[in-house]
Length: 294
Image (tube, rainbow, N blue to C red; front, side, top):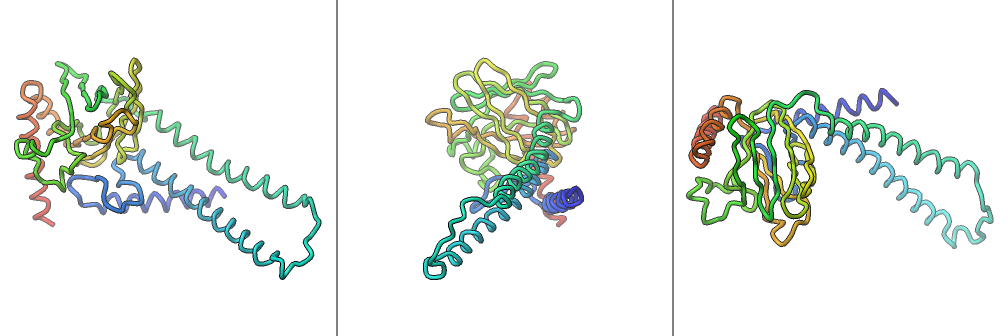
């Protein structure tokens, strides 16, 4: 069984890695029509979550087919015409042992990797190099970079009338209801700690491609972390019902190189809109060069 689990984990990880490196989208991932699986993972944690989802799906399929077979067998084998005199058996020790021990074994096989994954989610493998505080409001986010000369700004949904001014008219890159006026910018391959709280009601800071989702509770600070391994623009949303504009409270995180981040951070402390436009121009220029090379 140990070898089976190891092989299953290897195959799932290999499949996730192939999907990860095969993706050529310069702007990472976002929801798409008719999507039935996870968004492409951008962190090791999300790849572990994806593996666990595939792992448990195997049990779901096997149990569903088994129950379907048993139902069909009972319907055919014990129908009135084929079995006019029903059995009067009231107990079967072997069957009772099987349907007691079987589910226990299945639950153990699911629980062990589940607990390991849960522990990993709350145990950063290294010290954070960047700390950002995310504060949920009705219905936008305040971000605070806890660095020298603290940088604080608000991030709200991008209105259609502001797209041209912000230079975000391409809806494939800046989709409606997900694009924001000011993205949270972080460096790639950098352990980032996110302190999450709220000012009014309970919100939830969620980023599917990073595998993070944590409640923002007024009067309390929760903590999560991520280490994005791929540059690009990632989208999430508040995942708690927080009022009438809950559906209009997106989260956008732009992952850039370390040099780009340092340049942006220095400029953003005095001119955030200008720093954002400069960063966007540089990233778009790199994407065009990369696309031409392909």
